[in-house]
Length: 419
Ligand code: NAP
Ligand code: HSE
Image 1 (spheres, rainbow, N blue to C red):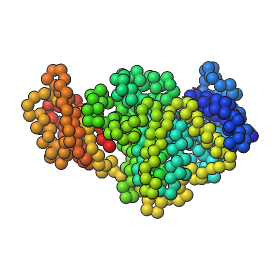
Image 2: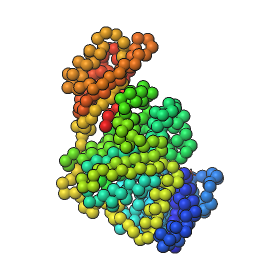
Image 3: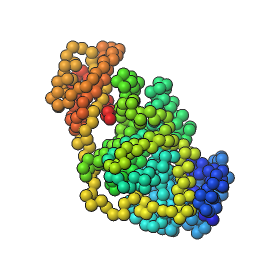
């Protein structure tokens, strides 16, 4: 018999208990063990829950309980979760977590602490999609050339509803929260941090690179308006929040931002809470992973698969998949050196000479304009929506600064990258 303790019996934790009960027969058969939830930890014992297991408010009652074999951390957050998981490992207990924020900051320390103790985290990236196993085990023969993906279900749910139903941002966010997709603090979703946490985990498995959220470009979806969708639609694009990792010799660029992508690309067809991740390996070519990226049941499916792995006696050590560092080493590419096409929205005074001045500014920075739309606004103002050919990030940033200085520009120009 395997005894499991669950620290955090919320959206995901409740679903873990339900799967272990409802699918007991198949889980017993697959793992060869009876798996029992011995105890759960919560903050509030009086909250109504859909599952009936012994509860405590003290996570250390679980991690210090000699009878418990596997600690499942589903409480979220970084510091408290780190202390709980560290204590579990020091007590030689196997750990399963869905906590990408924790791993974004502490994955290498936890890998060292775990050593040969199983430490699994399939649910931390892309909810129910087994992307960790695919990348760490299935594609381990390949150099990974690129990873591009929709990695946040909440943002994809919001962007899809804004694009297809013109629904207001705040209303859709509330719906995503009610459906259990969003983080306890939804700023992590809508400002791109959650997708960045996931990208960093994938980058460690793909490239052995140890970067923190502060080291990479992260932009969220809160400044996108209906005008941006109308430009995107007119020129055959969808807008998606993408996590992008690209290998350029022995450098890796890592970035998360809203992106215009051609409607023809497979990833543009990934809608709602679904996630879609494309991974390109040097020998396998492109592989695509699609499925529910958030929600209690989908996420718990991945958590329970890790519990089964551990009950079977299987383990991947080290947890991030590299036994030793890559000889050539991998460095983060400076953000200034990223090359992309860009989309800009600029509110200007609608008078002669304005377009010429903007074209001159871009020309001086060697940035070539690809297409442009002008949408008149009230009080002699107009929104200019334009896209550029490929150029360096440092040049577009200069252009944005220069644009702000012009007396006919109203407010800050808004920019998105085109992939
Ligand atoms: P949640 O619904 O907010 O559940 C968190 C649970 O942890 C609650 O039961 C809470 O207790 C308990 N908790 C928090 N702090 C505690 C403490 N100090 N001591 C004891 N218990 C504590 O969150 P969730 O959506 O299930 O997410 C859990 C984890 O999974 C997070 O790391 C999240 O990022 C990750 N994740 C979530 C999803 C998703 O779709 N929801 C998908 C992938 C990964 P109370 O119930 O009493 O408040
Ligand atoms: N809040 C996250 C999302 C949960 O919306 O994708 C899944 O990691």
